[in-house]
Length: 205
Image (cartoon, rainbow, N blue to C red; front, top):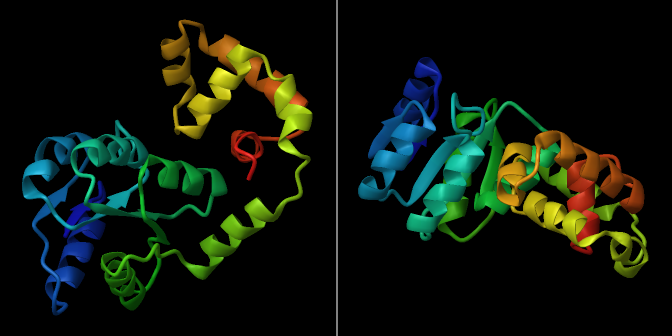
């Protein structure tokens, strides 16, 4: 086990819970993504508890990079947020589970065991939000996604990979304001209100 959490007291609390529980051992604890990226591959834990809202590089970006060098490691995102977009971005980056920080210790330990058994733990509230998002009725893919220009399709594909606006702008060699303009047109064409709905509709979910 390893923990990536910028709050010192919360990080210490997670470590204490793990060390007091039979079958759990913490091999590393990091205050930011940069430390984790430098040291986690060598520690090679089976499971990493990852805070989403880290200073500097986000936990989502950290997971995306670590998955490339630690494909067998399971990442459990811990956050105070119940935002569907953050959930999807975390899963797209390679996270396997998603829990709220206020989850009781038994839920956290149970989630880690579930991960090791091949599961994808989420709180019931988060799972319901995911189900509700996918359950929204959408028109057949060919109706609206066919109207996207090649550049607009590139942008939606980048969103599906979890890229941020600046990353998309840098990749395509355009300004962030241009990316936002394209997004507004994409939203209008797909008849959606945000990037998560655009990705879901584009992928034909």
